Image: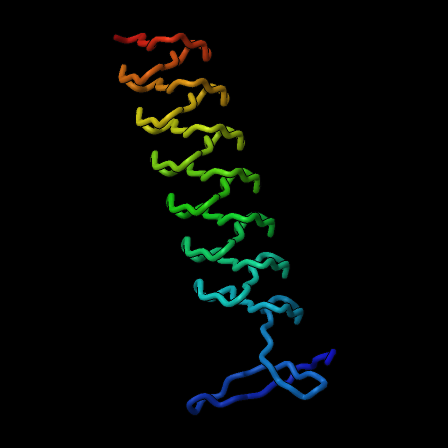
Length: 208
């Protein structure tokens, strides 16, 4: 029931021969062993498919994870095809409860991790390159992970939602839309780009 040893067969397949490695228990049963080519023979309970082109089984091992596995599929080259949880190829195996899609071209799930956020996640979708397509909450790419309850669209060309954050306001927000490049198109209240966040009850239009 305990120890295993390797049994090597040359098994014919349609006339050709190929190497097949089995694990044989003391009870005599045989089963296939998945061995990472550079794992020095150390095996896990998962299938190791570093070159599987995204075809995964119950658990894959990240080729650069030094054999540290999680309960998720690890698809560094899956082109955004994710399962219940993916691991960021550069996250050193630190996982969250979210899908990590730094190259998903704006296709997000319940929660993404900002590529430069060092694994710090929030309850919002992080779309620094979403071209203005936002969800319930975005994180400003240069805000160091500090989020608010508003959409942050520094490059939205004046297309705003309930509340935007001035790109240079260091995350200080008000109850108004901040449109420094709105060319005079205002909503209920705008903030003057050089007013340092000081607002009135009126629209501020320095260029009428």
